[in-house]
Amino acid sequence: MTTLTSVESSLRTRPVPVGPDLVIGGQAVVLMAGPCAVESYEQTRAAAEAVCRAGGKILRGGAFKPRSSPHSFQGLGRAGLEILRAVADEFGLRVITEALAVEHVPLVAEYADIIQVGSRNMQHFPLLWAVGETQTPVLLKRGLMSTVQEWLLAAEHIAHRGNHNIILCERGIRTFETATRNTLDTNAIALARQLSPYPVIGDPSHATGRADLVLPAARAAIAAGADGLLVEIHPNPAAALSDADQSLPLGAYPEFVRQVGKIAAAMGRTVE
Ligand code: PEP
Ligand code: MN
Image 1: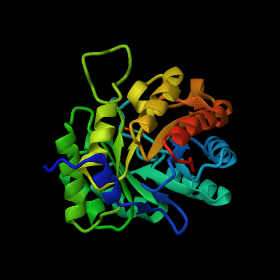
Image 2: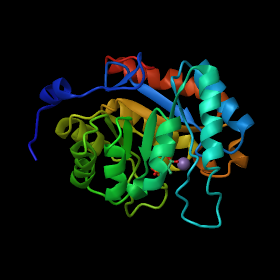
Image 3: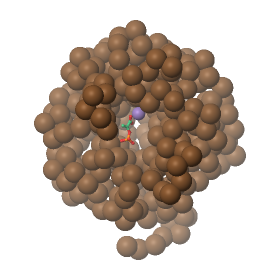
Image 4: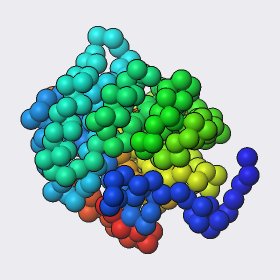
């Protein structure tokens, strides 16, 4: 792998268009926010309204959930995709949602503007090939135990099939530390931006697992050069069916956006 200087690499960043008027990997830091999982129409609509009011453009929400336990909520499937699309359209938002399996790809591509490949699936090569055969932007999360090189090679699997609309996402890795859910690897954000032509975003929610650490981790990600953030927000975090501890209440989101805006400004960037 060739190492580039940050100046060379920033010239090389390949912005990913998401619809006609939005790019990831351009001048603006792009925020994607919403619940971990789509639980109901009301819950998702409330989150979408908060995203829209805060000036956001992209709504997140899982319809197919990769849960450690088979006894946990697994997502609403197709019904979840329908809810996401309906509320996103009501507020003029784009949608990012996960395809958990190869057979989900055509269905998810019908509803989503960005297909998420989750951390546990980073080296699920048939899934990478399947999303690589679409032209839909793909957000590739780093595996929780994967090296930067393995992550970038996984992105190459997608590109090799013809889809270069790739966004990399650092979502925290597993380390010896157990005080937080994962460890945000800011080194990897900076390094992936140097080594790869693809935009890199940070996920401070999964990286920390704690709502009170989401803002500091988000600030660090932007300071390390992230082109965007993926953040979990929920109308009633205590009642969330997944990732309750790391979800920001909707009321906290406008201030979160203001605060990350200050770091973006210090980096010469705006927030979208
Ligand atoms: C998610 O975004 O809700 C998710 C399951 O993420 P990850 O794959 O990073 O665990
Ligand atoms: Mn989650």
